[in-house]
Length: 109
Image 1 (cartoon, rainbow, N blue to C red):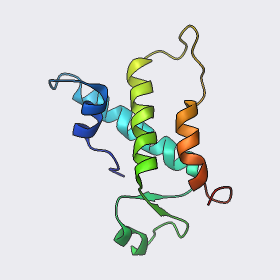
Image 2: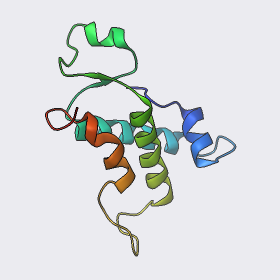
Image 3: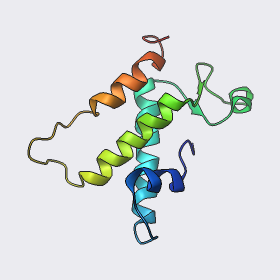
């Protein structure tokens, strides 16, 4: 999907160096997949991808709200590396839902 680059995520996380790059990339990939699943539609980096064979007819081109939601999820995964943490909810962070809800297929815009 490549909606968020490793450099963007590391800037968001305030991470220097490369020792956690593979872990951060895993979190990016998971957050992007989670975003597409929540939106119930394909999310594409560029408009021309919408016209490609096999593209989701309900697809959407990434926008700033989607990028912010992915980054919030990456931050959440990076900070909470266990399945359960004291005082933490197991759902998507509220800010993520707020950013993505208007773009959900069939229930948003």
